[in-house]
Length: 114
Image (cartoon, rainbow, N blue to C red):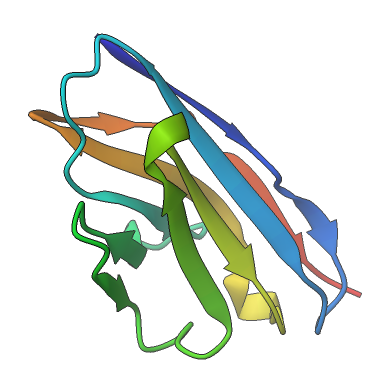
């Protein structure tokens, strides 16, 4: 069993920055992809960013150039640096880890508002 602990959400003004973290613990044999999804009220959950075990990354077009995903394999942790935040980035952000099975974090609220 794998547990995911997310942190870093909160309220920020438009143009501001936040950094999300997600640490995986438990019975981890190998982690493949790690990433972030988000779900805004009334909308479907969508991919924000993903990174593979080899270091390749993939971003939603709406966040390219503003968000950066990174991972620390020694700590089994994935990060999402979010810059130039917009009101439309407001959502619950979920950490995702693929370690033979798919695991999800509990979600952390990000609110962008003046």
